[in-house]
Length: 389
Length: 224
Image (cartoon, rainbow over all chains, first blue to last red; front, side):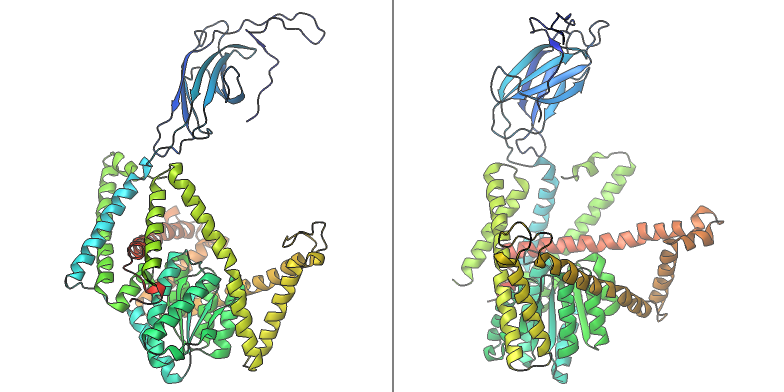
């Protein structure tokens, strides 16, 4: 914020001189605004950085003589000083929201009317400070829907734990994983598992590591080499643990080869080039691409296709799905990646989560239908309630 | 305890980050921001693990003369050169000799700009050829679905170039290729796109809940 330096005379000025030092006629200033008030602004998602100012218009606002051109707003951290210029608002304005306040800092505000040549006396108010709220009201819809969703997931998880039969549709891509590993075993060639290039905080990477655990168990059972190239060091470290534990769980700890869990490069296309090199040199019979992929997806999948490997891919990156669908034998679309762990393990508690997601889809579709009908009927409040920021 | 402690940490941090999404108060946001910073630092520091793995794997490959061991020598040499140029204070040619600073005119910057960037661009440009070969397979008339895909692809490709506009400019607006292209992209394509996106979003939430509650634990290395 920059303090303005006016050449205008204020009503507080006793003597004003021009450049030659001669008395300069003081312009008749407008009457000041009245009853300035400032208070913490209660917004939907106020983080305490907003203070709302209100005032009563100068009596000259709209008058023929000394008509008010607008109001200058000032903010200071000490009483009796105007401080920095906050804003200029047009004539007829009676409120303003200062959204640059630091929460908890006491401020003193002033408002001054101007006719374009001179300033009125100040109306002042202070101290006042912004207060952080405890809830982002505009995210209420998210909270309510997440609450419904979590309740559904937990209900079906509990039902599954009590022995309820939960139907899960067949996912060919997941059935193909064991088939692919079996084929690699028959051919005496390794399995390549690429967990994407996402960092460990990417939920697709986490989902991929859960699938890796199942794949590692199968390869341990068949004693088939499993190569896991990674683009992130933390993912490599997690993959090492996952594969080692899976081999131990299958009673084959000696079959685990730490040199097959490889960190290649953080650089996207250096990683793609290195993985392509592994495909062409070590000739894996099965390539599994499960996780977060970007433009390298087709580079990997097409090279794998050319190398003659059976390929299963899965990602929630919608823009990469067409490439995988085209170049791979099986593709897990979006949510199927997250369902894989439950589907492969058939653990009731995990299947309950899948069932809860399905019911939430029904709730979402119903809400969308209601929203469409309400919007057509002109009642936008329903749709507006779902707007977040 | 080997499982319980990570699961407890996951639960506490997961719930705290959820709370952070809904609560703008500094009592929560300050700590959440701090936690996010820790995450960034841990991830950055983990590069040492990656370097260790890279050196171990490639050294063994060279020692055993495995297939492609020559590439391993190149990999380790280039990594060592880039590390030396990036970290060695005297190796900088620029005015600022602070360790690790990337600046214009340094050998490190030169190798990055004129070796790594072109190499990566080369890999990226291969995509054009891979798209062509993949499209050839996808658009072959093998089934009704593939035929539909082929027709839609031809319309969209033509509708996106001036030739498409030229071919149909005398037809009514709704029969012109650019209009049909926009309709295909805005309705059937977007509907499928959003359908997958919504399913994936719910999948993320379900997965997140399972991880926070400790129901999903295979990412820790096993279910038990």
